[in-house]
Length: 235
Image (cartoon, rainbow, N blue to C red):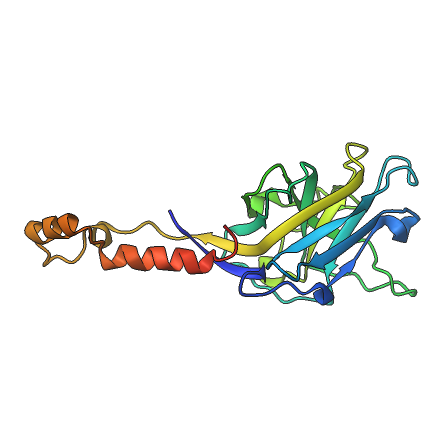
């Protein structure tokens, strides 16, 4: 079954590093660093940096998040797909895609206040499209589960982020993840019997002639063309 997607970053919404900013553990006295670098030769972006776990005694995080407040309504979609480029782009480490539906007012010094984030983890083990459903996103506060959080408000997504963290001492050091795109996706309804069989006036002889000629029905051609256009640059 073919899915419908809408690009959030990448694809027909080209990556722009100016729309992202670092949010690293240095705000808590740590020493981790992160960057989002857009390739001048390829339509990709690289999330990379160094995760330090020594300064904070085994903890640590490095992240890039969108600037300002977004206004994304994703209620019509089933989740988010993260398209990992390759082959050298996958470092085998565990990353998290984060969403926020509320933003805390900044501190007096302008730095972000801690708030609830919705995280979905994935391992960058190979070039692939990581399809995340909404139930994959779990509420966290300062990296720990937030069991009493309100449900994620898909009608008001205000921030998107990419995070590398230690997962309490499980990983550290340099990291690098190259992405084609981040996109919202939804399942396309299954075709009806009428759509699959074609117009009622078509005869068996007509279908046989089409097969002999190697022709495809117009509906299938349209579906294939749309699939290519939606995922151009992602596969």
